[in-house]
Length: 259
Ligand code: PMP
Image 1 (spheres, rainbow, N blue to C red):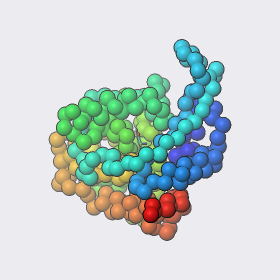
Image 2: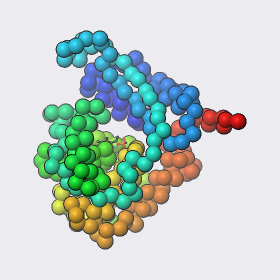
Image 3: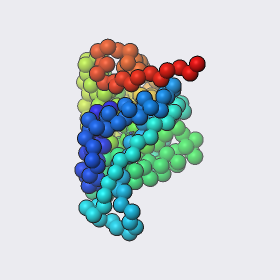
Image 4: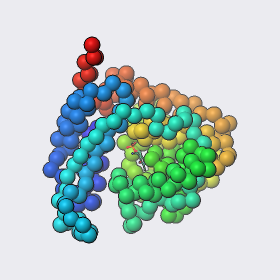
């Protein structure tokens, strides 16, 4: 949770959103709301920092007051499949000098929505976007990883990707638990076709294998062994079943069952 809010505050700095809360405050507000809403299923937590001035036609961030809101809603399987058939999008990822992809800004999701819509209308589960240079950036709402000859690769943040918290988690786990080399480096589209394994990562998407890209199977078209190992580890950790990584989880009080 802390890392998510650190990223939100970074985004606020870029967008001159001066919200009156620290990372600590935002974490406390979140735990409080989750407890009050008494959820009994998996949920989605959606914080939003926004410009709150009651004014129209003012594009000057420095003149507009800011505020913060938070909702929590029950949430199921985001991607709708546990093995993904993806396509390369005809839409390109937004470029840093246009709208920085490293911030999680609502407007950027127009880019994601165009790509996701195109992909799903064409019968695929998810879109992989290339950046302005034609290199692989990420999914519409997920970071991407490729395994090739025992090394794990993911595009660097400079290739117009969001600094995913799950991306970071997986990079750490692959090194610490599987002893694997993990490299953030530019990836070509055609490298993905020839990868041993490809998977996507995100808070909503968890860690999900890509079994096919542009109608070409990835390796034998089945989830790969490293993906499966990381996936099992990740699922265990996020539900608090691995004591070693309990510090990555935040505990909330359980709602009392209705009688
Ligand atoms: N890229 C994009 C465009 C996203 O919307 C998301 C989801 N937040 C991610 C990557 C994954 O980030 P995280 O692991 O922090 O959820």
